Image (spheres, each protein chain N blue to C red):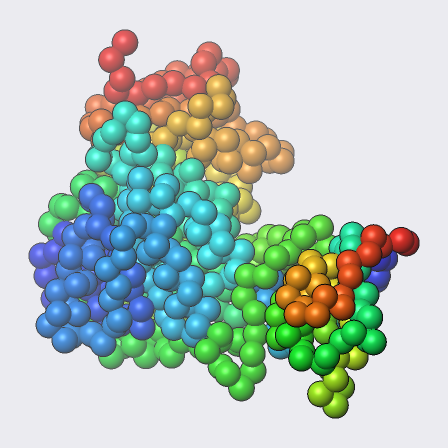
Length: 95
Length: 396
């Protein structure tokens, strides 16, 4: 994750983050050991996974469960655990 | 024409409580500890009497007091607390966080020996331990100065070129509990001088959400520490500007150091706080006998006004540093270490000797200080120093 970051003269003082929503810019997908994979043939689109995901990494489109945001999903497995029809499996991450 | 000063009999603690009444901070979280208790006791009376509109929070410990100050200051409130010794030690974690989060909290600290063995009397081990916490530190000689420093500290802490917290120190019991005639400034004049508190990114501005205190790892922590260092360096430039405005407003003569009879001095004492008062009377006595002795009193210890000290001591041949705390470094107390480092680049380096005194409130007498001057006089004649670190007033 090599990025050219700003120097000490160009950042807010005291560790302040001077705007909201910056967690989007912080990619945490590389933390994962296991990745969630959904079998959409079994999914009932109850969106329990969307409600429970602590990292807002379940994609929902038009009321349907539409996969995962793998740039931010840390692989905690809560979605797989909460799924009432067990259509989400945690698979070993292969990088 | 001189106008007659109106003096009110107050202890140093009461004088600081009066300063806090005039400052009227938005939030004051407090926990009592000897010998600071009189400050918060006095201030709580002002709150109870409706003389200030301050939100006073009686917290369960000093750790909570400083935590509440941090929260209040980040929210956008002017926050103050006060402490001593073990209270300061208990808030240690948050003392560092206050400075690194760049919150301009002003905290009177009544200097007291840090345990153990447990002791409630004066020495400087409490604030000297916190010298690397990133706070500005001012040391007052008497109650009047502690009162004035508290007011000046608000403007110093909140200055956009500084934005660092300030400890306003005075000697426990010696000045905190001794009654002296204190001249209080006009309430409105103080309020006009300190102005309204404003920070650029208050946490409670819901129109512009910000985050205080996020995790700061290898990628940015160093940059934030570099900023802190720059702020302290910049403070050396900004503090004299603020003090000049203070002096103009209140007709005073504040500076970062006090120079006493140094111009033609061969030997000089360097000492903080109340002991400087005793030492100046000794200087006067010795001057009357034709001995060329002077005194330098650092008023600011953080930032350390090195250039001013070098200039003030440029013609002095022997410097005796009086330390009211020990660093247990096997090379002297904190004031000695820093003074010696500051004077290292002088073209004509003076001979230096450290005198550790007054630990745990042990009295220091004029004859002790005269003895130190005699010692420095002998070094001047001999041209060398025998022992670097010495203990004054301890039983052998």
